Every structure is written in structure tokens, then in C-alpha cells.
Amino acid sequence: MNTPASEETLSSPQSVAPEVVAIVPAAGVGKRMRADLPKQYLTIEDKTLLEHTVHYLLEHPSINKVVIAIGEEDGYFHSTSLGSDKRIVVTTGGKERADSVLAGLRVTNAEWVMVHDAARPCVRHEDIDALIAEAISHTHGAILACPVRDTMKRGTGDNKIETTVCREQLWHALTPQMFKREQLLNALEIALDKSLAVTDEASAIELAGGAPKLVSGHADNIKVTQPEDLALAAFFLAQRNSGQ
Image (cartoon, rainbow, N blue to C red):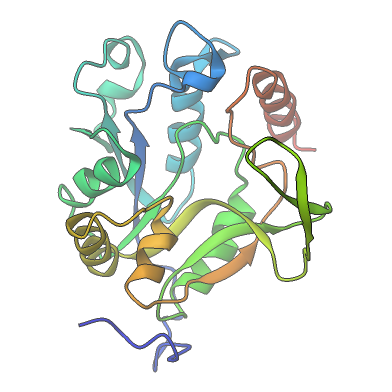
């Protein structure tokens, strides 16, 4: 049974950060990168994006395991350093992101899960701290997000401006996104069974009647999607590694 969306917080919030299993869907092919391999295997400083992402997640004190969902015909994962880490579980993902996340959920019994994009290596530990604090005190979990800063336009099919959209209360959804495992598992199963569009984990919770909390995160938590994003991610990683 779904918890009513009007219930804002848990009756007795946890005061101690829980242990969290991170799920990283990494079965996509990243066509927009126009590269000859999936974007999660592109490299920065001789490490793949996937390695940067997973290693940094495992450096966080609340994350004790990472589940990576890779493609059925993935020919690249074996060449990374990730397969030898006992804190990492590998499972076979699916065609869509939701299928991969669901596969990851089914191989862990953790109470709390945090889903993070494989090609989003620049997340900060301080943002993960803030996400955990909000997620454990909110009935429907929480996601990292950034308020929209630019003027927003709604376009037509032939790329003409239809109208200007008020940016107040609009946010860019980021990851990680953190929820109770059972809650997310049930929401995804129901959504997929009904063939509903699930664009991120929060949208599955929304479809089930929930209202996840928005947690403001840093804008440098970019997702590598276009070719020019790789250089920008390298810059942000260099800043983070130098302590800036």
C-alpha cells in the first residue's frame, strides 16, 4: 500500500546516518556522445567515468556497497579495476534505465538505496551528506536537484518558441536519488507493469503517489552526455581532487 503523499515526514526520524547501498545503472550505450564505446567507459586521467563514479561513492562513509547493472553484452567492464573489489556487486541490467535499477534492487536487501548515474562522476560528498539527512527524515525519500536559473522556453515541433515558462519552482533533477528499497522496488514494478514512463527514480515514486524531497546540490554535478561534457567533467574532477 502506498503512503499518502500528504504525509510529510516520518514519525520518528533516524538521527544516525544509515548504511546505504548505491545502485549504478550502467547498461546504456550513450549515443549522444558519438563515441565508439559506451560513455561510462570513456576515460579521464586513465580511469573510466564508471571507475571515477564508483570509487568516489565507496569513499563515502555511509555507502558500504555498490551494485552496478551492466549490459548483457558489455565487453568493457572486465578491463576496469572494479571487478576485484568485494564491495561491488555486478548484475545484468536491461534495455531501459528503470529495468537496470530494478535489477540492482533485486540483488540487495538493504533498507536504503541510493541510485546514481554512471556518467555523473563529479558529485560531492557534502551533497551526499545533505541527501542522506533529508531522505531518512522524509516519507518519500529525496533527490539532489538544482533550481532552474535560466529563462525557460517551451518549443514547437519545428523548434519555434511557443511560450516562456515561469522558472519559479522548477528544478533540474540530479542524482543520487535515495529511497527505502522496498518503496522504490514496488513503485518501479507497478510503473513498468502498467507501461508508465519512468524517467528517473523519483518519477516512479511520484506515479505511486509520493512526493520526494528536493535537496539543493552543486551545479558541477554534471552528467556527461555530450562530447564537450567530458572536458568539463575533467576540470571539475581536477578541482575536487585538489581540494578546491
